[in-house]
Length: 360
Length: 277
Ligand SMILES: Nc1ncnc2c1ncn2[C@@H]1O[C@H](COP(=O)(O)OP(=O)(O)O)[C@@H](O)[C@H]1O
Ligand SMILES: [Mg+2]
Image (cartoon, protein in one colour):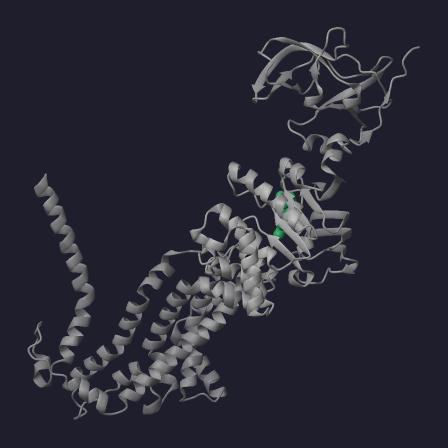
C-alpha cells in the first residue's frame, strides 16, 4: 500500500531534457500505465521512479517520504525488464531467490517464497532449468516471479510484452491483469507504447509526450474526454478524425461536410469525430457527409471506409458494421450525433461546445 | 574427375603434414636430445636410439632446479591472480562507470604495452630497488604486471562492455552492491574470458627472461628460464645440451597440461564475444 507523489520531477541528460515538470500522484494499489510514442520519456520516468536514474530536479515521495537518494532496493521496488534480464548462469530458482539471498533472508523463507511464486506462475516444474532452456513466455514469467518474491512496495514493468508474439501477448496481458487482482495492495506502474495494452490494463493512464504529461485519467475518460488533440489521436484506433472547423450561422463547418449545430467562436478551431461515431444516415436525418468511398478496409466485424470530402487535408474515416456490403466508389450518406463531436481550440486544448440554440 | 579429387585430397593432407611437422619438430627434437647422453647428442638422428632418463634425473637432483621450478610456479600463479583481480575491477569501472577521461585512460593502459621491455628496464629497476624488492620474487610479480595488465584489462573491458546493461540493472534492483554485481553476476559469465586471459598471462610470466635475469641475482630465487640458460656442465667448457633440453621439456609440460585442461574454455573465450540470455 504505497502512495507515490511526483513533484516537479525533471530529468536531463546533458542538454537533452528527457522529462520536464512531471506532477503526478499515484494512489496505493493503483495500476497506472504510462503510454506515449517512442522517445517520449516513458522508460526514463519509470527508471527515475525505480531509482536507476538520478533525478535532476524535483521530489519523489513514497508515502510522504522523499526517496530521491535511495537505491532501488531501499525504495522497495521490483522491476520487470523488457528483455527480462534473467541471470543466464542461474537456474530459475536461483534467479528468483537472488534478491532474497542478498537481503540475507533465512533459507527456509527463501524456499517458501520462491515456491509460492513458482506455484502461482506455473513454474514449479521448471525451477531447475536455466533461462536458455525456457521459452519466451516462460522467461517472462520468471522475470515476474523474481519481482513477486521480494514483496515490492511498487511493481514496475517496462514494455514487458514487446518481445512476445501476438497470441502470447494477449494471454500474458490477461495474466498481468490477474496478477494485479491478486496483489491488489501493490502499486503497479506499467510502461507501453501500445494504447490497447494501456486501455485494457490501466486503472489510470498517463499520456506522455516529449517528456511532459499530456493527460491523466481513467481509460474511458481519456477516450471520451481527451484533453487535447494529441490524446484524442493517440487513444483509439483508428485515430480520431480531426479537421479545421469554421463557425457560422448554421453552426460549425468542416471542409466538404454539412454544418453541425454547435456554437463556438474563435480562430483555428478543430473538430474531432471518432470513426466509430460516424454511421449511415437514416432516411430524413440530417446528413453530415455524402460522397464516394475512396478505400474500404474489411476487418471482419467492422470495416474502415475512407472518404475524401472536398477541401479536406486528411481523409475522413468511418468505422461501419462489417456486414455492410461496401465497395470502393459507392456513395454513402453519413450522419453523426452532435454529442459525439469534440472541439479543440487553436492551442490544441479541448473546448466546451454548446449546442446551437434552436430557432423557436 | 575422381583422380583430380584424389590429388586435391593428397595435396591437402600433405600441406597439413607439412604444417604439423614444421610446428612440432623443434619440440620433438628437444625431447629427442633430452633422452641422449654424452656424444650421442652430437650425432644427428631423428629417432631415439635409447631411452635414457639420466638427463632428467640429473636436472632434478642436482643444483637448484626444483627450487627454480617452484619459484616459477609461484610467480606465474601470483601474477595471474593479481592481474585478474585488478583487471576485473578495472574493467568494471572502464566499461560501466561513466567518468571523464575514460577513453584516454583506456588508451594509456594499452600504450603501456607498446614499449619494449628493454626501454622500461632501467626505470623498473629503480622502482624495484625503491620498494626493497631487489632479488626477491616480489620484484618479478610486480614487473610482470607491466605486460599482463594491459591486455587482461583490455580483453575483460571488451567482454564486460558486451554484457547487457539490463542484467546489471536487474542486479541493482535486487539489491546487489557493485562488488556483488561483479562477483556474482559478471564473473560467472566471464569465465571463458578469464581462463583465456589468465592462461596467456601465465604463459608470459612463465617464459619471461629479461626481468628475471635482471631483478634476481641469487640461485635460489631464480625462475626457470634464467636457470636453464645458466645451466653449466661439469667441466664448465662444454654446454650440457642434454640437461638443458630435459629442463626445457619439464618446464613446457605444465603449459601443455594447462592448455589441455582448459581447451574448451579457451575456444569459447576466443570465439564468444558476449553473453546471450
Ligand atoms: N542515457 C541517455 N542518454 C541520453 N539521452 C537519453 C538517455 N536515455 C534516454 N534518453 C533520451 O530521453 C528521451 C526519452 O527516452 P525514453 O524514456 O527511453 O523513451 P521511451 O518513451 O521510448 O521509453 C529520448 O529522447 C532519449 O533519446
Ligand atoms: Mg522505452
